[in-house]
Image (tube, rainbow, N blue to C red; front, side, top):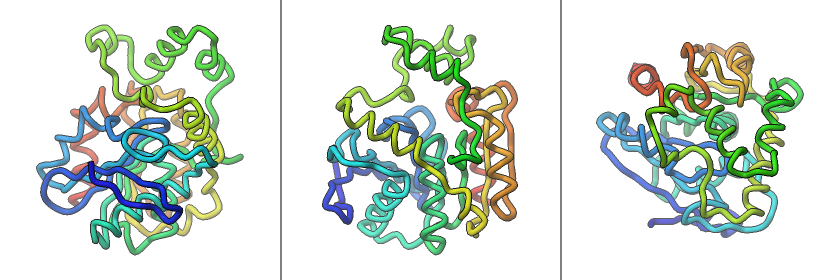
Length: 258
């Protein structure tokens, strides 16, 4: 697995597939590049896709130190520098969308277009998940907590017809401290004040039935980012990009190629 070293010396593993203009796919919290396994093929006919394992996941180093969404964005820049890619398209979902916000803010010359999926501006302006959702994920019975997470990701009909494995419920190789570090990074995200500085053409995508990262965040981002467009996928939960891929992937492709 190829790796690059971030500014602090952390080895970050990355994966490159396909042909065409470069497209960086950024996964959700506590997940490796496998988050994209079910839909990556949708983009490879038109793009050279770049994924990576966050620090703390997969084949990347797992330092026990504070992580931030802005720091994760710096890791992406290290990958792009290593690949000598000056300008890329960026598609980030969930916490990956928070990381993508920092890429577009801190490195506007590197981001050709931006897609923010099922994500939030964070901070006091972001709409947080409800107490009942947090309680369901924190229950002591881990099998029940995992089931609760699955039901936040997918509709009952999907779960009934699509058994394991599920690639979006966390990297099983992560040490517990790294999971905590990821949670803190996502919870600490707040890009509200700088979102108006984003200059890349931006599409915001969200499922209407997402209560894991409430759908109200989509309009907040759209209104805050100059010229941003929004598309809500009816009936979709958090993992809209997988369950509703027949709608979501063409939508994103049309935006990126248009």
